[in-house]
Image 1 (tube, rainbow, N blue to C red):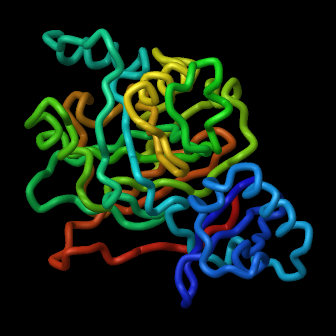
Image 2 (spheres, rainbow, N blue to C red):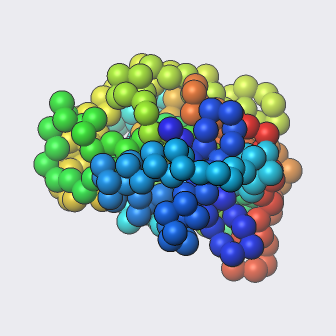
Amino acid sequence: MRLVSFRQAQGVRTGALLDNDEVVDVGRQIGRQPVSIRELLALGRAGRELLKNSVRDARERLLLKDLVLAAPIHNPTKFLGLGYSYRSHVNEVREQKPQTVFPKYQVWFNKQVSCIVGPYDAIHRPRVSHQLDYEGELAVVIGPTCRHVERKRAADVIAGFMVCNDVSVRDWQSRTPTATLGKSFDTHGPTGPWVTLDLSVAEAERLWVRTKVNGVPRQNGNTSDFIYSIGEMIEELSTVFTLEAGDILATGTPSGVGALMDPPQFLKAGDVVSVEIQGLGIVENRVIDEPCSPRLTSSAKKVSGS
């Protein structure tokens, strides 16, 4: 099953996306509007039963092509990213920046949740930088609240997976060791286009990840190239703090980032960046110059299916 968030006049709604690209409005079916994906995930098995019953009992269905999709999880408690997680990316860094010292342990950073936008919303090129870059990534979505999860039990706490573009402002990323500022500009967290629930960890660790800019391939990696397994990622994080329903873990990017091209190829206004992950869909975002208003103007479009 896949879960989507979509915009309507009365706000953001939650839908169950069926294989024929029809959508069941879950909130309408259970008599509670609105209900968020994060709330459903927090219910655990009861939430899955609600979803199952909603699909079974629905008499009215919407068409995916008629909907404007929003970020599946727009309000997680945490949005974390992992650096240096693909062998191919580490190798390209070594080649371009041989002085780099790689850490012995996983390198996690915060992406502030205010950076999250939908799968087809615009992303801003900041007024303070021209070093805007893309990073196509697999995102893990946490289900039940958990702590001290052994790697072999990781599947028990994963609700699903989605596509993420870990948009990065390279000069701001390198200003401090934490990288958080360069990863957290408003609009720099496109996610979606939906959360895919029924995918095993083993399957998630052998998916191709492809990024294009204006239709031209930039990244072509596979999660089988992970340095750390998904189980190891969750074990590391949950050793330190509680993971909660809807938390987003961006698992790092393969080689091909713009900053390490020769010469570097940064994004500019008018560019269109697409990230596609095998079986999980595509997020596609147009770059615009940061507007004068403090928050984005959506450029969301309708979609025609998976």
